[in-house]
Image 1 (spheres, rainbow over the protein chains, first blue to last red):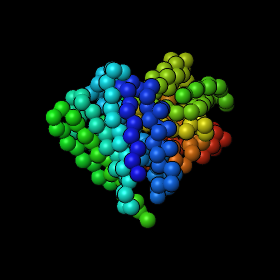
Image 2 (spheres, rainbow over the protein chains, first blue to last red):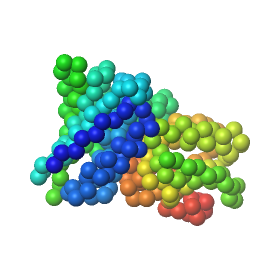
Image 3 (tube, rainbow over the protein chains, first blue to last red):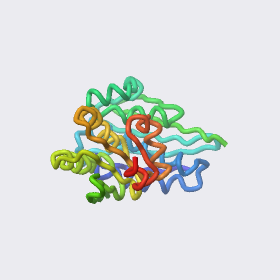
Length: 137
Length: 110
């Protein structure tokens, strides 16, 4: 099974992204709570790219491809913006986020806690971030 | 879509959230809390009974007020979260920083 979506780089596209993710995960071996969390993690990565790599330019697009196998679900997010390698960013300490009143950083904590594996590669101007969720049962 | 409603109940300002909070609309939540603070609120109860979804953009809004509220003696409680939304607070450990209650009555009673 494969699902594909092109997302325009504007935050108003996030709601459409969530609907797409929920529809694509119908029948997948994850609980409703897990599907909710996976939706959140994919949205966090896309929101980061939309805001920080593409400055909310609606002419730019992010490509999302979902692949599933018997053991896992793979979300492949690619774009041609400034590379944002989530693996290079350490998840900040929550207390630090609070004291410094920074509104960023929480998304990275969520993605790293929710997903089982994260891969990143940048080749010929295309950045690809792969978020992988393993099925438990 | 996010809709907010404000009301007052027993000296607490109630902020009820309906729908979804994400990076496109978290500023609305931020402004609503800011308005309550400027209006002199000492006790804020965020009612999330009808909140279907919240991303880090919305969670970050709550986080950004915690220190200030501690300094000013303003209390903020959250109530009525569905299990899936509550889980997100728990993943981040926000349930350790913000008091979370099952419903509005128990939030108001404490």
